[in-house]
Length: 171
Image (cartoon, rainbow, N blue to C red; front, side, top):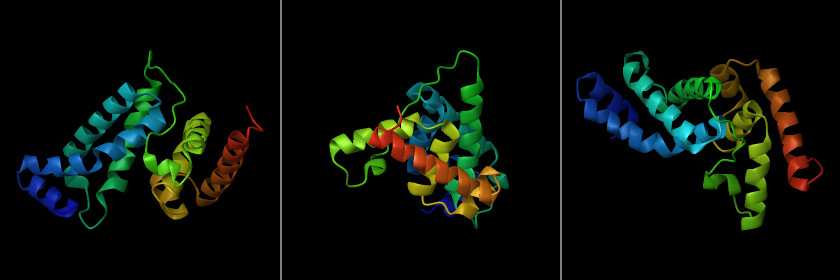
């Protein structure tokens, strides 16, 4: 079953069809949430609440579009709420997604994950969405509500900081 069919079935009353979307995107959502929130427990909470938000808002979803980019906006909002809650622990945690390592050695991969984890959360988000998810500048601009030029500039500076962190020039 594809995403659009799962949404159609869910809107027709088959609530179990939503399980397809959760199973398909749960690991990806957790990885993104962990990068934004900074800890496993907060990421799990934000992901679960975002899936609930998606279920409640499914009637607003355009089945002609991809599900995950729409869902990501909900997830992102939940992550920001999670981070702003009093008593929420904020850690600079690297992504757990194995794609972040590419073909690097284990040591290089660990260095990369640590460096990504040390980026500012908004820069980390841009780097992950651009380089792991393959979002275009226009998609980043539209979905995150940031002017295209600002996206390009922030990515440029985030990449430079990432290079400095990896090379050990910045501590």
